[in-house]
Image (tube, rainbow, N blue to C red):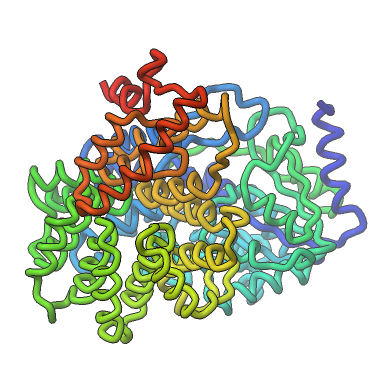
Length: 626
């Protein structure tokens, strides 16, 4: 590993020959942690939000689920030798639930960020201000106005228009807090086209970018913007990314966040340095003839809190657990005090979600059948009845019902996407079912070719607004296109990207659903021997994670994955068939699919996990749950 001084010299050498006005600074919350600014780091702010708005122990509860489903923090570099910790929930997801739980979305929810509004600049903001004075420009994810304050103090005049761009908004431009990109509902749709174009122009207008204090965790907007660029979109751009740490300055062995990889894919020359930010900025300041950053000042963090009633904490926790797919916790809170709202539409939606995840599709279908056909949730009623029939394997009744509902939902894009996705899944299922394959092929051939969409980001404003529903529809259409070609999907990128999208938003159930599809698409029937052990491990992990969330349906759908005959015993398979409310004919279909494969596998040397003395997925799950 190179000596720290040589690493810094090599890094700043990337800027050799460039004037300050040719270099763009890009910053995140890390530059505002030092005193006197003393703002919380991302983890500190997340803990503050949980302590303020949610029931006691909510953060520990979420972290336990993250541990079980395998969401862990990434190591920054080789110097980080500790065991991976459970990943903190996304701050924007928590703030979204907190805001929705309070009366009228209470703008005063964001008073939890009052120290951000009142923050004073520190030495890193002063460096940024000096850079602007030399003609530089600055892009930041931060809401505070510390750079603008530092510039006005040092130059005696306001910062020039356009010199500082807050791509998530700032308190200066959104004093009522409503335009801040602080909640999931604000950021999950990505940048509007105008904002995306503005950021792209800023990147292309400069020869180099220095990234400081930025975690690179803006998956929904910055990542999607860069992912949509052509392979030469950032060609010629030099990008120096400083990953702040107390380690001796060094170059990490690999990209530490996905955005760094995406920038390389777009043609940028990305150079990453791990170490102290001020060490590198001191060298840059020297090269540009600027004052070196002063010595750091101690932190004096504030701790703004709001008075939140117990009922609001209950409601916020309930909304958070729903958005995360923690069905076990949703059921618990309902037993302890309901949903915190008297709206019958919401009550029905909650019950619908829980019954679906329990695999109680007969019960759920009856519930929706008796719901008002002209009520506010009539679109959900139309889709859910068809979805229940599909899940039970009653494919022809499902298709006939959904076809009749299509004209009724055309005026609601979200409902139309959801219903169309279910129609497509029915046809996909028909195509894979021997007794309905002929009809499935005919329906498939009559369908239009799927619309072009690269799966990395919304294709237009409507798709952007209804990203969740559109993503699910695009995934099944891609699967149908593979069936139309008569070949398996060439890869499982759609399912992997969707799994990532749900993981980033915090929806663990959505993430596991697409992990299921990744396993289905990635199955290789010729992988024998040690492959059985790997299959048993991956299928068992998926089953365990679903059961821990409280999704019986998600868990026992695992026995329908390709290769299930290599993993699950007949007892386990029969248990799954009788636990979920499949139709009787579908149970016969599934058993007829499983048994010959199981017997053939055993006759060619395969052994049941139980027969060989090893724990099968169910036994392993029970051991972990004790």
